[in-house]
Image (tube, rainbow, N blue to C red; front, side):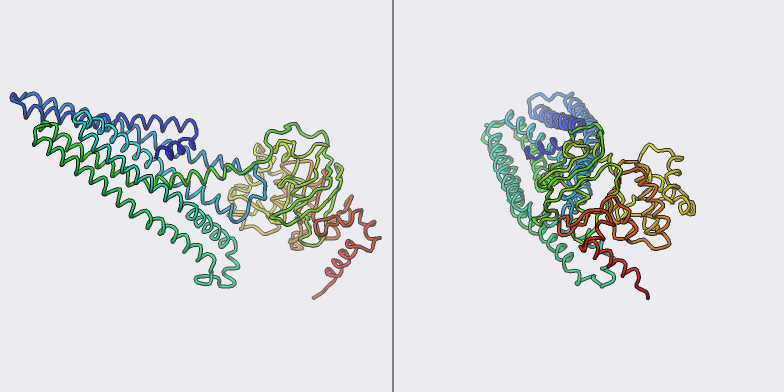
Length: 577
């Protein structure tokens, strides 16, 4: 129990940890006020069973009782406020810490399982910790402190009954320790089932259109149903394992209370214990019984708290990229890759690739689908780290730069655009959070967005739905370009930015791209002839290797992969329906 409480306190930020320390100290003071009631009862009983009854004693007892009750209520109020504030503040800050930590984690970390785990931790786990965990820890701490105070009082009254109580406490602690060990054995299975369930739910929601199209609902959605059943069974298995142990612990607690009452009466009858002390000890047995039962009831939940802390810490332990590197901007923006290799889940994606991209040049990357084109651009921007070789920017290995400094050198426009559930103006401001509205409008005009934005109900203050579903593909793409123009980075990476755009939007989109790429280094993945034929150099990538390189005219003179690729595209464009 103490180990779990220490781990939870270490999980909290310093300012919130101090709130919990103060709250625990106040719980001890509350226990002391609670002990005053016992003292008051003893004084009253002693006077009642003495030869001369002091008529002032009931008033004195009442006064002590009032002090005890008022003190308990006041202290409990401040302790509760501290633990509530500490709990919600801890989890709010921890969500931000996780988000900030994940900013610098390699993209290879993110898959359905990891996203499911992150979602589970930042929602279910944190919700449990902020709402229940702090309360449980404070209740367990308060119960333990009350038990400690009562145990000291019992030893003060009669050491024999004190040893009976101590023996009962040791047996209860052993049962509790066994419960914790059992929980540790079952925890990994429960965590794995819960994470898998969240992953399946995420995949189900992301593929909801296919689910509807192919009627993959009910019993047909086997993976989701199995994950749901496995998760329910893991909870049932844990509860089924805990119930007998909790029953034994409850029996030991009640047996301890019965033993205290029985021997108090026996010692009183044989004259070795004053009747006032005997009655007071009997009253204390009920108090300690309630405290132990309260503490026992939350033992299983304590383990859940420990699991929640462990799951959050596991995310925070994911290795980050270099945050302490060079913070000065590059002296030049020439890019060079030397013999780079990269594998993903044991599958080699990039194999011994070298190239140079001078500043201001336009480099087109073409080749068959799955050949490694997108991976290559992500390696240049250090979304992933290469396994072998090196990539330099301005003559410096990109691993040696501070990650924020490196990211400031790149702007990205991807085929799949992600827009935030926020206003259009704020979506554009992601390129520069300090931009004024005039700057936002100017950038939107360059990206050919202004006209369609002004047709929306609230113009630039229109709040987009999740991922901008209210906009067409071309409109989302142009907003993404506006965001990139706002960032004004020297290197632009275009990943098939115009691949899926209809002809009506293509002209506007090409104009927006021209505004974005003016006087910049351009690295583009493209399939359309007119977007690659004017490139300074073309890299033809197949099976993770650069098969050909050169300008359009140079490559067309070779009877190679690029020429076949272009001829195939031209035939496809000439087809008529």
